[in-house]
Length: 269
Ligand SMILES: C[S@@+](CC[C@H](N)C(=O)[O-])C[C@H]1O[C@@H](n2cnc3c(N)ncnc32)[C@H](O)[C@@H]1O
Image 1: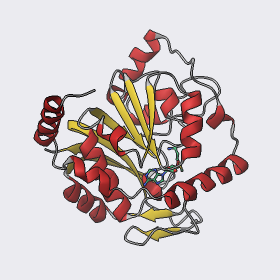
Image 2: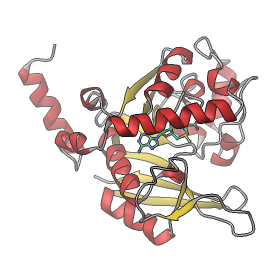
Image 3: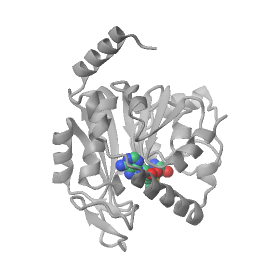
């Protein structure tokens, strides 16, 4: 149990490293409608995709120390294409190995922990946050003990992590966020990261030579009918997001085939 003095000290510390006060957490949209929308989407994913990688039990996953040391030196492109062990496909997240190994790593939109259960074997701590209770229930059953999972509505649990994380990764996540959502997600990242902490974000940028699915411009409302639709951001809109949330952009890498723009943000205080 924290004493009042300790709570005050923690709040003071947070104010010194954060632009956003703890009250900010309560403004995050977290209705049961959002939970239901994404629970249903996970039922669709598990019925239409190969469910094995999502259900693969990695609670006992241990990697060789020598392999973990090698991962530390990998570039973002090498991490993207890295297969950590049999039974998984490649990581498909754009982040340097040195941002992961021994670091405190978080992911918003972690789903049933495809990434989290593998990063948990490399990072000192992995925090996964999601709207879907169904996905989080699976995540908790298949992850190593370094992993923790929090639902977006658990404000007190989120507060425990304020100002303490090094890196935020994303995998098939920012592609589904409209401008307003991407903005509060980045504000949440800013709140949970240490000063100079980084976010690696995967934005959608379409290649018109490839048939397009359901894609809307970034500044459109969310679609109730298509939770997994894409939202397309221009570079100017991404720069606007950074400015409004308190980050600087340190790199942008476009992958035309994957239809992605990978953006590395760094927290400014
Ligand atoms: C396409 S899935 C990707 C899941 C996971 N990153 C992976 O690669 O398997 C998108 C996930 O983000 C969650 N999600 C979507 N928007 C969200 C938001 N604004 N906040 C938290 N979770 C969200 C969904 O519930 C879903 O689990």
